[in-house]
Image (cartoon, rainbow, N blue to C red; front, side, top):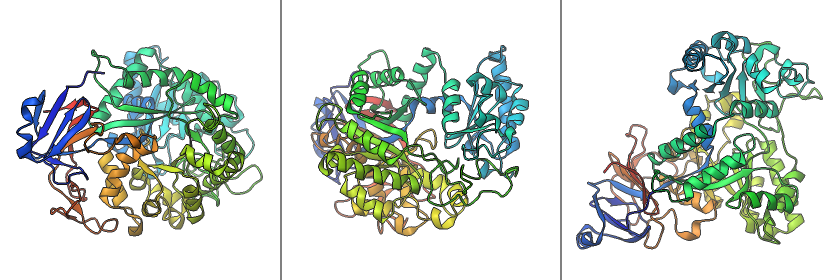
Length: 591
């Protein structure tokens, strides 16, 4: 990490600070905010600063925290064949053409055909054919090369015959279609090539076998790219199916150790998704990875709605009557013949014992956070029961003191909300899930029906109840684009679930530090004595959202005491990040 300048004075701008909403300048000294105030006072401080930056009207805000990312997975997606609309793929034919082009390009670099072709981001719901490519189509398009093509939610993939052989699953009953009904996709035609659940994890681990040099490069490039978007901290959700323990240790070291020869990178709060049965299990993991903020994160109670692996109370709404239907991907029934309601990977008892274990991982009453991936309503019911059992095992106060967290948490009804509040549980949510997959025409409505889909992601209910909220992207599922996250939370299709831009911004800044147990440091705020984690933005217009939480109109006149933010109306230009600072160390600079 490069060394920080001893002091930097930013002046002639707009400072987003509740401590001084009308501040025009800010002084950073030894990595903390030393002063903020008016330009006329700043003129007298210029001589003592090592560097003076003329903001020329730019906005200085607390830097963003992305509270749920997968660094390696995002790096691999950036190197992969892009099957998203942003990559020009709008149909099955486009996808096959992109895969064919990617295979030809890789063949030139790897004529042996040994290297795996990675592809990412397909979503059959957005294509006119309403189906994805089959194993045979993948084989034909890519010339028999091993191919791993992940769905946009990264909870399922289509793989080629050579990839199945490479991963050793070609005789697995779940792959051949000879498994019992309810395996997750075994009712589908054999030729689909679709893998979900454990089979998907097996194939993904093989597909992601990397050289140490490439792994390190992807870590650095991914984090550096995020810094250019105003990101000062990320919560890395690592797991055995995503990255190695050694990889996580390397990632943490490069974000926390000063290296004058390498660019500085955002702060990293590390989570490792490994299930623990006893405190000894958790202690052993912490002995190897002592820097962990929590044990969990990508510890999955269920899967995803798009891949039909989220655990639901009621069956999916779009199951076809005929498994040979062109639009089919997934199982029709459970083993008992009942309609498919998704996968439940953990029991309430397993959740409870894990929470009890991590709470005491460093001795009685001393431990780390637990965190679980929860999508469907049946999965949330299981999570709530797990919290209640953990409270019976260790006491309510012990559960509350641990500040456990839930990742995603799309379904939160009144009963669930009451338990989350009682047990002090925070939520790490991804507003871009709503803007990308929600609404009356998104994949959630297709899979669940409009009534169930309309109740997802109740931002306003959560915020008004006081549930600790932190926003993130789940990159690479949605891009690291924090202003889009803020915009999405203010524009939920249900007006009653919209929150103000200010509340959404706090969830994407201070909320991330709070959920990682670092709110006491002052991080996420621009006030004297707080760590200087900040970003500088060029925006066409600044203002305050009118009628907070309900309307998307803006006023350029600041209400007294309300810090300004960029105009995030649908027709407004995206704010441009000019400069990112982490504790006084420059991560990104255009001045």
